[in-house]
Each structure stands twice: as structure tokens, then as C-alpha cells.
Length: 457
Image (tube, rainbow, N blue to C red):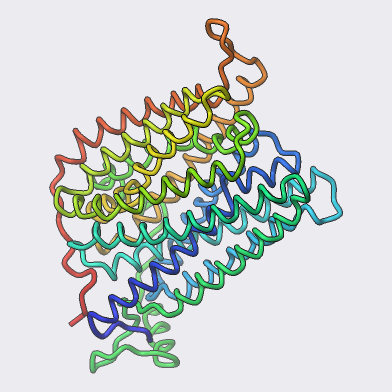
């Protein structure tokens, strides 16, 4: 029954989503990256398998295809999004696995199962939550709002990550298991915050209307739902939805950008955390301190990039932030133990520039290119299909990494690390994406959505 009745309701809901999403993003960071890599290394998992396991988030997106027909029948998304977000509580259990009286093989198996199940629930709710927040933000303010939201999230994430990094560094030599317990408690608190503020949000979508134009609830809504089922035509199959989506030129273009980005990301970035810890021997505190200051820089530039996107278009800003991500990969390709400290600083600056707008830009292009009545379904298709693609790319990257680590390539007498080669490959894919956006995305005419963020009349 939480319908927004005024502009103030829309504004409050956007603020609540900012807080909720900040907590969710912090959980993502604490349950991945260097923290999860440390846990998995402790449990005896190899570098290649660490990268593949952290990429399970993309494979979990396959569930979205099977849930698509169910979700598109749901009139309001609030309950679904809240229930699926609650399953992030499984990430707290992952850090308690080392305390279980089982061998390393079973510990690794338990981590994979819990991580994958948690990601499945998160992926089920992702398209619905994206459509929900999109309906709360006017199209003319998307760049501004999402940039401010990301700035707040980055500050909270970086501050928490810095604290968590110091905790793990402190307990690394003494008793790292204590550090795992503290990380688990932090994730639990953040999940609670995530759920509370989702519950406080309003939702513009209306379920069933009566003759007076009022929304029906309870038994009246149930009766209307049953009546709708009786007169309903045959359900559109998943394959029919996929065929319809790919027959649309704008969908194909947005999907192509997503897949190019996914390929460049999963071929190299999932393996960089273990590279920093195991090969470059960088302390957690150094990684987190550099990340903290790089994120302060990200917080500073994100709103500026958002305003530029509203002025010049999402595609143009996305193109240049993708180039920054490519430079991050190129910097990592030249990072070795001898220059690890200064090059890590360079990588962090390039990465922060990229992440300041990259997620906003990709999502913004999809909102610009997708039909409003098909938005949730098409968001689901992009997320799930590109997610499956991303997982297989990470498996390919893991195989290449494993092969290169076993054969230890040497060029001109200098040892080349496997992650250097993977990052160089990722950089070239980014260049292809840069060119594609310039030639095929920026030239496309955008039809602005006039209904999002407005009170229904």
C-alpha cells in the first residue's frame, strides 16, 4: 500500500534507496575481492579457482531467465526485492566456515554452495529493484541522482573496507579467525540496514484498481487476480521474449555494449585480488588505505560526471570511463613486485575514475534504449544472458591463468606473471568497446521516458 502521493514521497524513497543500496554494496565488497580471496586462500583454494568462484555471481544470473515469467506477473516488486535481499545473510555464514570441523575440500565446497545460493537470491531481485528505482527517478535527473547515490555508497563502502582491512591486517599474524568473525558481524549489521530501508521505500507501481480508481488490497486484490487469470491469454514463453528482444535494434546495441564490457571485466579483474595478495605481497592496510583515498577522489568526481551525462548523454561519458578502466588494466599489466606500491596507486586512480560512472552509464544506456513496458523483462535478459557469458569468460580466464602459472613465461629474461597477460588482453577488449560506443551507440536517437518519477494521475 506504499504508494507515493507527493514529490516529497519520491524524494524520501530515493534517499532510502541510497542508504539501502550503500549497505548492499558494502556487503558485496566484504563478501568478495581481497576479503573473500583471503578466506579462500586460508581454506586452500588456488588462485585460478578463486577467480572462478568469485565469478559465480554472473553464473547465478541464469536464474533470472527461469524466474522471468513469474516476476513479470508481479504487480509490485517491494516484497520480492526485500525477501531476496534478506538472503545476503548467507554471506555472514561463509566467514564462519573455517570454524567447522571439516577438511579443506569440504570447506571449499561449503563456500561455493553458500556463495552461489546467496548470489542466486540476489540475482532474482536485481531486475525488479532496478525497475523499482528507475520508476522513482525522472529521466532528466538520472545522471545527477545515480551519481550522488554512488558517491554516498562509495564513501560508506571505502570507510568500511578500510576498517575491515585494518582488522584483517591486525589479526593476520595473531589469529586471522578472529578477523573472519568480525567481518561476519559487519555483514550481518549491513544486511539488517539494507532490509530496514527497503521496507521504508514507496513504490509507484499499482496492483489492481477498482471502479473509483483506487488500488485494491487484501481479498479484493486476490479476487481481481483470480479473475485476471481466468481471462488471461497464454503466457509468453522465455524464448518468445528473447526473440522479441533481439529483434529490437536498440536492445541489440545495449546488449552488445554489456557483453563487451563483461568480457573485458571477467577475463582479468576477478584474478587481480589474489595477485595482489599472493604475488605482489601487498598488505591489506596498504590496499585499503590507497583504495580509501582513491574513493575520496571518486566521490569528488562522480557528481560532476553525472551532471555531464545529463548534459552530453550517457553514452559519451560511458565511453571515456570505459577507457579509464582500460588504463587500469594496462597499469596492472605492468605491475610486478618491484614496482607494486607506486603502480597500485596508479591502478587505483584509474579504477576510481572508471567506477565513478561506469555502472551508471551502462544502466543509463539500458534505460534510454529499452521500451518502458518491456523494461523489467529486458533488464532481466541482459543481466542473465551476459551473466552466464561472464562466468564462462572467467572460466576461460582461469584456465589461461592456470596454464601460464604452470609454465612461467619469460620474456627477455624477465618473468611474466599470468595476471599481466590477462590484463593486457582485457585492455584490448576495452578499446574495441570504446570504438563500438562511438560508432553505434552515440549515433542512436534517444526517446526520453516521461512517466518515471512522476505522480500517476
